[in-house]
Image 1 (spheres, rainbow, N blue to C red):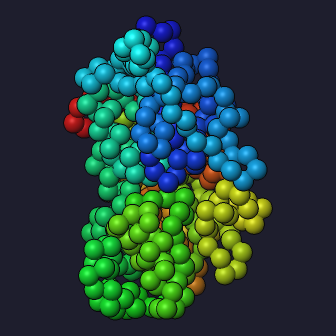
Image 2 (tube, rainbow, N blue to C red; image 1 turned 60 degrees about the vertical axis):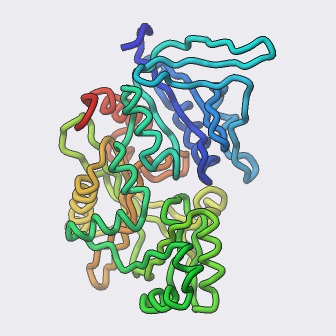
Image 3 (cartoon, helix red, strand yellow; image 1 turned 120 degrees about the vertical axis):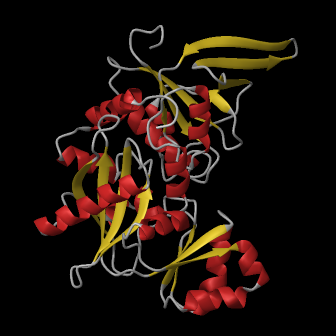
Length: 372
């Protein structure tokens, strides 16, 4: 425990990924809802270039406004965790030299970062080295779950249906696009071309015919040199939240949520964050009880298989005609924006937004340090 009466929470937002603005919007929701009688909060932003800076504790300044997200701005002062300690310092450079200010110790970190350099195990490794507890999955789990190809590979090895896919790297495509196209053609069209290590539907293209494949590969490659091409999986888009309420306890599955998008579209970036009236988020999902139980069981299996900790959201395709249940992906830091499904699902289970934050922070504080 720090010198403060309440546990001190470092809320980290922004980051170096293409989901920087989404992270800021997520942080706005957290800052507005967190129980200040229980937690002492320090908001820290990471600029797109990787500088850590203090930011104002102002949720409104971090939200989407008029279709535009917010970005963390650079500063003359940088914040950092001292390696091997829980000490937070601020370093200010000037013509007279460098001034170091001690900002006190940190009890737990809430890394509200999506995508590379935040959700992929990199920052989790920093927290492990610093000896500070943090919300969410550990290094290995974060790294594997961030990479859609590795996620599917691990889950498939555990006997969990993940559909059909092909991994294409930009090196492979540049060296032999014909061979790559043959592998993709075998999936059948339409296919979905995605950056392997991005979220929020950034860089994703639905491809209905081979002539459009090259442009889609280029679009995905602009975000990640590792590209996953997925066969279309018929069915309803169902989501399930998973929550571990203390370290070592059995994870629990939330009521199911369903995403319904207009005919012929998919749940892309615009529908998620701007055209929210064009999509329907239903919770609990209207599925038969035995089907819901099966999906919840698979969600917990996926959580355990990937060695997740704290929280995750598992996304599915469920086809009522065939009964197939396919895992699409696993999100180790699901969005907490006002439009996000994860807190909405847990609210249906009787855990409101503020209580959910208490749950994940207390779970992080309950973990032992070192290898787990």
